Image (cartoon, rainbow, N blue to C red; front, top):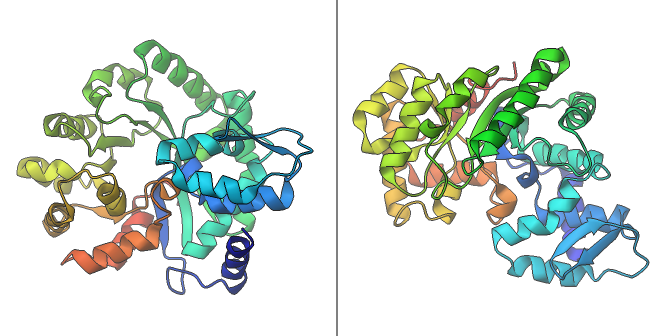
Length: 349
């Protein structure tokens, strides 16, 4: 544990940034809880909350007064043995706690500095903080934005729900957020859009959610999907185009429909590409197929930018790692173009 702490502190003190010398890019596709490596969250807990954290059921962390010493090395050992979903569950009650909110945002800001990222747009399921209303949660984000701006960064929220959520729950959720969005101008400053994501294989196709159009008070920024049935993925992309998405999450199997690919180019719709996520989650048969897909997309002239998806669920491969994979494998990949697009198509101006 001490070695991990020391390495992290040294990386921050030296500011040996990953992305060159300038903050030239935004990060447009990542989830709020997945930005910071879990090892760095543990460091913060150990240094600042060691008597206020409990490890229970041998799998989960939560804030609770605790007079017993925590075996941090054992937590790391267990964490490294878990798959990404169980690892996320281990930290859920920490990251989604009001007590940890400022420190977690400081950790995010340190990550942005380390990776030379200017601004970020993250997906979040509003209402997921314990004992906190959506309105209170948004007030937390609005207040913390002062700290972000002091550190010369900014963020926006893409609020999301899941493709397996019932229509009734989605309508209730969207109605509440839309009511707040219309009531407070400051909320319109921090929410830039909404997404229907998650459960790409078992969830419904996006066109099943067409009822949501009448609830649209802000831009849709949908996960088109990269897992499962190709026809469903292509249907998702068509639906994204139909309702006016200007950015689409993933959507790499658009290469199966050249007409659809041309339509994305003609309508200037950006693909939020996440190559290492595609690779590690095995959305193609092998890496060579993925490389062929990326070569095809990038050679087509469709607008794109490279993103990290969810680093702490993907062996901590960050934005720069994704850029380097593209530079190594994709013939016509243009780092400068991707960085410019991450600024151009961002909702942060």
